[in-house]
Amino acid sequence: MKLKTLFAGGNAERIATGFLFTEGPVWCDGVLRFSDIPGDCIYQWQPDGQVSRWRHPSGNSNGLTRDRNGFVVACEHGNRRVSRSDAHGQPHTIVDSYNGKRLNSPNDVVVRSDGMIFFTDPPYGIDESQREQPINGVYAVHPDGQIVLVGTDFDRPNGLAFAPDEQTLYIGDSRRRHVRAFDVASDGTLSNSRTPFDMDHPQPGSPDGMKVDQAGRLYVAGATGIWVFEPSGALIGIIAMPELPANLAWGDADLQTLYITARTSVYRIRTTTPGVPVCGVSR
Image (cartoon, rainbow, N blue to C red):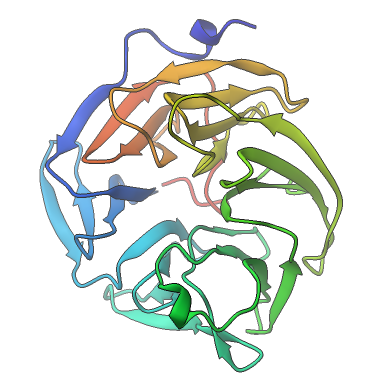
């Protein structure tokens, strides 16, 4: 397959700019929400081009997703927690500690269709002197609130995404510049680690946020642009971006627009294959 067959033509279009460091895009009820980490704000972009603050302060939020009820779940660097915003947009803590010690700085998050939350916890948002967790882990939070450490052998765990059948979880390790794949049990346990996606490159940029389309192809923000892989690990190609991308999300009613957060701006590009809905919520 050639990369151009996955896109409806044209290059990525810049739809908003003037931010400090954009991250965590998520499509919500016909609008795009995304983080500006140092700007301490979650913004909302509307299809008419209007951009407004949705939540400020945001706890220096990074990755965003939605739960089964459509509420926004956020990884907050500044507050060192994973939060859920209620119907009024007010955030409430889901988890901020493990074994009685504060988390590092939760980075990215996905929610399985049964409500289980998986998130990565590298130390990017804290000084070394602030660290309380001895490792940079991957955690699962059960619907009853129980938190379980499911990944311990990462250097800098970052973006993560489920395959369409949710039997496989992909997790990027930015320091090692690769993406690993794991089998996922019903209790959140990870097994059968393999490394099918090599993203080493001479240019700056490491595997960051990622999403999957309905054909199972993996799209990962990395050096020079968005890397697109077959499930086997074969690289289809790289979508060149004018700014180094950090994350991406499927949006529009048909889930065929890929929205990309890239440093100071947000971009979009039309695709020929729909993306996987976030936790089964596509609106």
